[in-house]
Length: 175
Image (cartoon, rainbow, N blue to C red; front, side, top):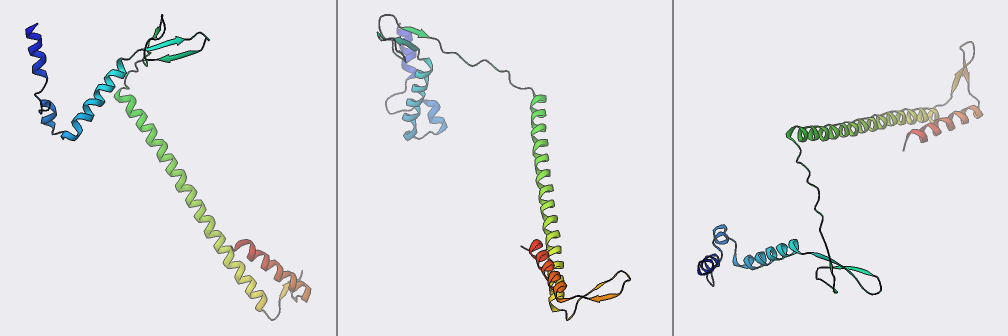
């Protein structure tokens, strides 16, 4: 018995001294006590049992202390052990993830290119519609071609319809 006490005493540091392993790591004294308390709480909570208690009314409650005359201890179930993935499985998973990211990036780039092309097309159509409208309102006379290919000057009503169509096209393409 004397020998066990001596071994036990040699594990406990002298008052005012820290554990040798803590001193070597340079853990400041401010953190030593909270770390020791935290480790003690974790160890105690891991070893605690859970008891199922049923009272006279039939309601059930769960607690960490035994209750009543015949407390029922409940075993904690641990998660089933999952084998770690092999290197090949990790590489395949990583490759699938990278491929998915590449596909997503490619789709985003394609969508951006389509939006840019649509914007350029709209801008070009807008410029053409504005130019056409300006030519119509600034022209002293407008003409069209008949079946034989001869120029025919537009009436005021026809000119108003052409002006309105040009304005509608300009509103359609210009924001």
